Picture 1: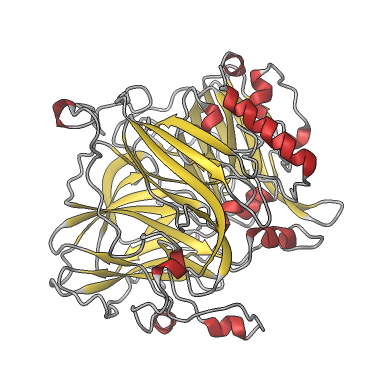
Picture 2: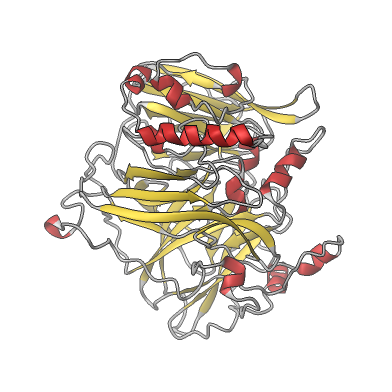
Length: 590
């Protein structure tokens, strides 16, 4: 895997952390042996044919039309506030959900309604916020999507907003702030939606969140990046698994940094049951880096990519761009009951990272959890393509042929300097800047379909199946995310698309994030879901630099939507707050 074993050994001199969990991760138990295993589904509803989803299957049910209506409501209360923790030993100010980083797990069954009451308690200084529920289709509820300036106004300081949406897809995903680059400072957490699977496993380990980590506050990073002659490349300081890793404090001290820092703060730990098969729910919840995940000595069987179950395939390394997820099965058969192994996640060569290697410890039943593993990494070099697994390999379990496109749009990615010598991104010829006070969805609902150019709004009118060709004219890879849809991935590769090649048109890969490689192309297609949806690079720093577009889909149906009064009230609250306070929106806002 190209891991620098000596460097990792230096960072993990001991697996016994010197900091308490509360000092590294607040109230979160993720990454500790106290985090509970997940059940195969949640109790609290009817069980037709023994399961909450009845006879529906992952191989024979169209999830976009035939999801169950369980009538069950899962309610969560989130308070967002500032705090100071040291996930890798380096203490820094962060944003926490209920005092935790990563934030609390949201769990539901397929077809349940999820209600999340979000309270903005960000002070010192105050800030707006909004939370995006990544990958959810929000069919008929686009105002619940959580993108400020697109689907809602930000939640004003000392105010609250209640999100309500249906889990119409199932699998693994996450939530995160969508206000500027806020989530890179800690406002993110995992979501698990239990659903049918033909894959056989014994233990659900739960979420494994992989995230690059920055020691500077997100606003300071954005300010430096968007200063005249600032660099668009932002280097991460570390790499975390479930919010934990060690850091060599001497590297910070050598620069004169006097921030409190503790070596050997503590890494994440997992317990495997010998001979049993375990489900791990991998999530790239970082701000920029592409992750390459592996476990020494163990084969990974991929059973889902994003919210799409796939025909199982084996690999030793799973590659994930920001926002992507993969569910994998791992059988604990590589040693004895006393064995231990390193879990690894490395930022690829196309990522900007000062310390790219993250590790966690995997212990079989009788292993000493105070001893470091001595296993060796797989010898699978980084290919340097900055791309996902071959599309020929990733085949959805429920087959869907791509329909004939009713409209095709080509959008180019460009890096440029404006007249003030600020380096920005253009997407489709525009560097986007949101207006927090005028969400595009609310404008479209009122019948106003004329927008300022800098909002970068694309109207697809009544088209039912839209093809988008992304030409990446930049030296960076970009994880492209479309809100409100699971799109078909028709083709990707170096250079320009030939205009006709489609990988397995009878059943192309479907997902909500796909990497486009440097100076390459990506061709995707989506079946229209009425609403206004963000389409953007999921690298936080690129989106901040203007790499964002809003798609208006079926505007006549959008005009007929009955948007709840609470959405309008959130805008009134935001307007009142901004009339008394200056919003420091130095970036795109998204």
